[in-house]
Image (cartoon, rainbow, N blue to C red; front, side):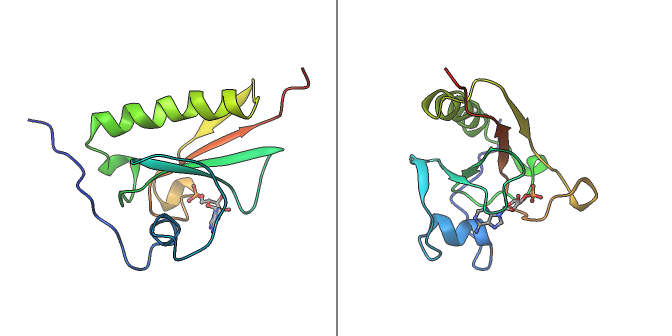
Length: 115
Ligand code: AMP
């Protein structure tokens, strides 16, 4: 049977602190499972992060296929809402791949469509 990532939260994790409202941040979108914010250090004209509320350190720790589906639904939703037609998605997994924040997140990197 599939393991489900439970409602874990980590005291010192920066994205958990944002999820708990301890660090102020402008959420572009939020639902029960996840929220979306602009990256503080953007690497593209549009650089958003999709962040599950539950503390999951890396993609390797994601067990919940419903959350997986929610994340992908959120990619489609937010890119349409923000009028971002062409974009890259990126999940850094592990320090060797450049992961700095060990709380699963998906980068969306793109440009705002001119039409
Ligand atoms: P990664 O290298 O995949 O772990 O990416 C972590 C990302 O989180 C980086 O692009 C950071 O700029 C971004 N980041 C860190 N702290 C914040 C914050 N408080 N608000 C928004 N983005 C953040």
